[in-house]
Length: 252
Image 1 (cartoon, rainbow, N blue to C red):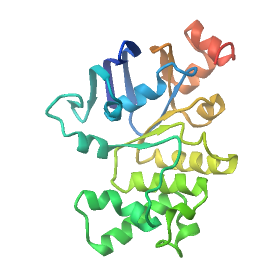
Image 2 (image 1 turned 180 degrees about the horizontal axis):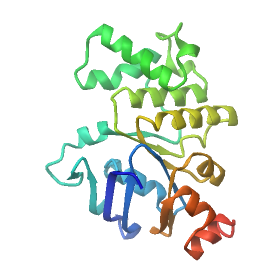
Image 3 (image 1 turned 90 degrees about the horizontal axis):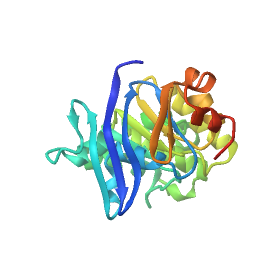
Image 4 (image 1 turned 30 degrees about the vertical axis):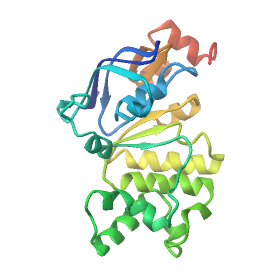
């Protein structure tokens, strides 16, 4: 395993009296795609959103344990949450373009962080739309409404918007589940290219997708970490009976 970008140590998450994640410890490798897999309700998305402290946006949630990023526990009260969420971005299940132009969507984050020079913003827009595979489709209508884009294009726009603040880690929460097959394939292609520069953590309920994309796999079941390791080993020689049963389709 390569040097970890994130180290999760004894992480637990509860919603009221329901404990959704139980004492998870795992290292997330840098510059790879890590797929979090498991049946519905097993804690995949809860674990993912805990990595960037987005889980705290849910009322009544409790988190304990540590998530070490850049040498510090992101749950330390002294940590700047805004900076954490800048460094660890999220591509959600459904695209949510802001109610503004394509251009303004991409520059929204950089402006929040103090970047106002027009030439700089123009460069960011082209660079990140190219990275998201959208530039050639929208270059002549940057100042038209983002809502006019197709759903697949909107998701790639959201990807460009997330990349525009230059995160180190990109979290993807079933980011292709709302897309048609061609749009999903385009997002997958972008992720495979982006892992050269970003560490990507992907929650997916589609095993075929995990097999196509993952370098490293984390298997969750009933809120617990059952098995993790290099994708080739987990998919072809799983060590745990629950992992084998899931991969063979015995439960979903």
